[in-house]
Image 1 (cartoon, rainbow, N blue to C red):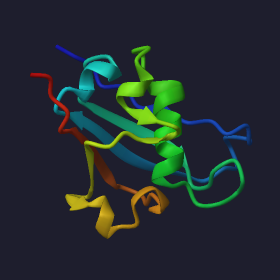
Image 2: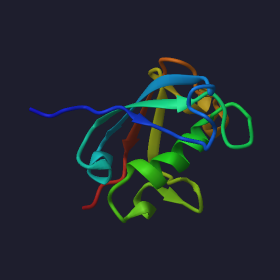
Image 3: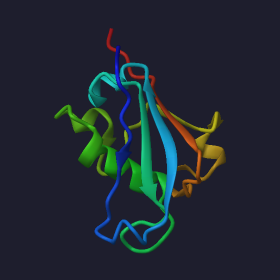
Image 4: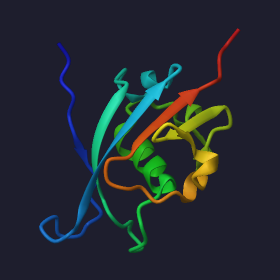
Length: 121
């Protein structure tokens, strides 16, 4: 039996004052192996990033690389601080290209799915 843990992102502000929102991040197509072989990651994140702007997918990708990813092969997920080509992202079952890609501002209850289309052969 596996236990799903909720991870909280800290930005250095007081946790008692800082508003939070809940989201779920999922990985498929082999990406889950980079994230402790866990497909689903419920997260509690701040409403704003370090600059005080709304927390975006770009902020989430940075956090996932720095705090959630346990595998050392970061280059399988990002290249030059952007999501690697060949990884599809669905935000609430919609292609992220329709939602603004990395600029999308995460909202309460969002489900973000990363799907690798990269396969060896």
